[in-house]
Length: 261
Image (tube, rainbow, N blue to C red; front, side, top):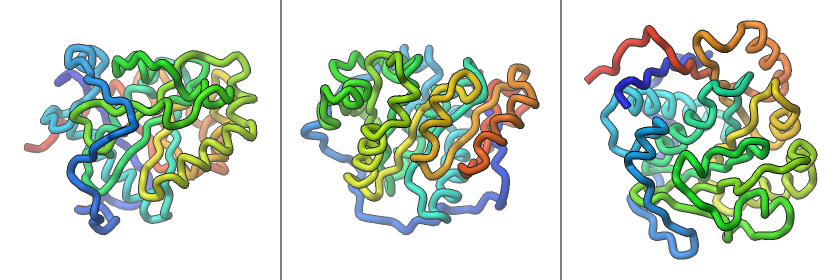
């Protein structure tokens, strides 16, 4: 885990010392009675570079910094939903989406729902060690309800995962369709204070992400040092011109200062 290095480059205001949202009455621990609970394997999380609550590694510190800055941007505009995007595959998008969701949920003022909407190559379940009996793909097919597909990782307080069980052949049409709009509206209305984090397919690989982003309020771009081409990033920013981008994450950075402490 100590080898994970990430640099965060967020455009706009300077880092402020505290998040903007006032404290609310969320309990430190939430008892889940209907949501299925699973115990992630520590070895699997380490292999997949997933941080755990309370981690003191440089990676965890970087994601806490990312969390604070993302929250500031979202709270400034009263945004609730965030899409995690990348120009191409293997940029670390899914790893970033999971780790950001973990870090967001570590803030006791927030609950977080992580949704795997990469319906071409779903990966959230495998990275967390979930073997879902039903997933978001089943919801979109009309074969399951939301409450049938939710999973809570033990000791990851305030975090719930809505995984995808399998890929969909008509994924972009599904993400642009009425059932998906209804699902997003349902997820937003169920818990008004919950932050929704959506993991989406790469922007330049297919039209899935572009079909879906009108349903979210903002996005986060993940790029990989030495892999993402400048022209590809510029093209993505042009394609996303109508969707606010709260910032970028530079993955696989080779020259990043270690965290203070």
